[in-house]
Image (cartoon, rainbow, N blue to C red; front, side, top):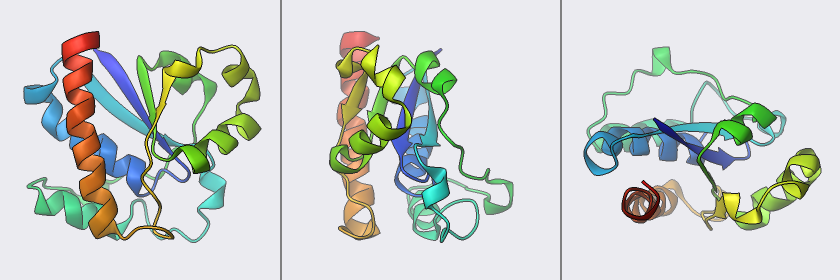
Length: 153
């Protein structure tokens, strides 16, 4: 099974949605792949309440996923092992996540082919509402699945 790693800052909203949606769609659209997600700087999400953003849960339920909030895991901090074990990596916003990667994982970045991380441009709630961001993530996911299963798979 090939692992796709989604990255965002706090592993609370965008990357969690991408992970859950990918895993919901992958058995049919991209078999042989599974997604995980991590936060590059989980410590910056001090104002996050609960294990996952409410907007993420609502959007997943709207798309037919029976998401059990009581069994939801807490956000997970990115570690070098996560980066090394991923077959493909997607960070949700270049302007936000590349500087965090440079700051927190400089040795990994300096010894890794830059194309190992694909950067999207999905803003956090400070620049885009969930009603705008989550469909954008879903659209990006579908394109990614086509590429992963058609070109890399």
